[in-house]
Length: 171
Image (cartoon, rainbow, N blue to C red):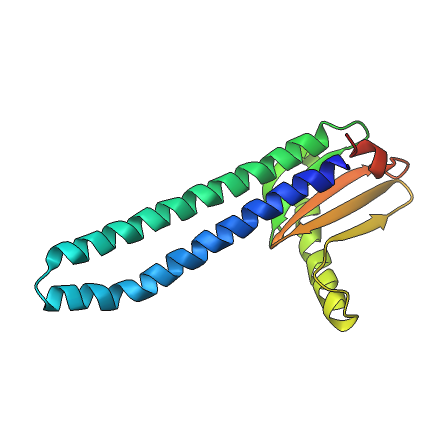
């Protein structure tokens, strides 16, 4: 199995769990005010206290899931950059650097470019009915950039044009 495919699969699983936690957290917060107000109206303040504790607990679970996701994305950037033939790896969100490994002189430019590529991939996937964007490759005379989309995050890999990425990112 391709090393990067496996890592991105793990990160996508973490993202799904994070989104599930966030959805449950939002649902609990939407239900809580009504339940809290009825508990106060009935004079059962301890019920209201338990609801607040439950909301706080779900928020910390969501924060833990978010941290795991962010740490996994950082691990991907570091793992990718440790491979021979890779110049830099940036994880970006909305054109901003979230995590970076390798050559630091290009990280901001790569992150900004990911936003343009995200917009292009998203529009193309809709207009051409491709489905959710997964990856994009841009090859120039001297260098190439491979982009992998994970939710709203983009993993951007910079390498010399002659690097065979399938080999560099395999086990």
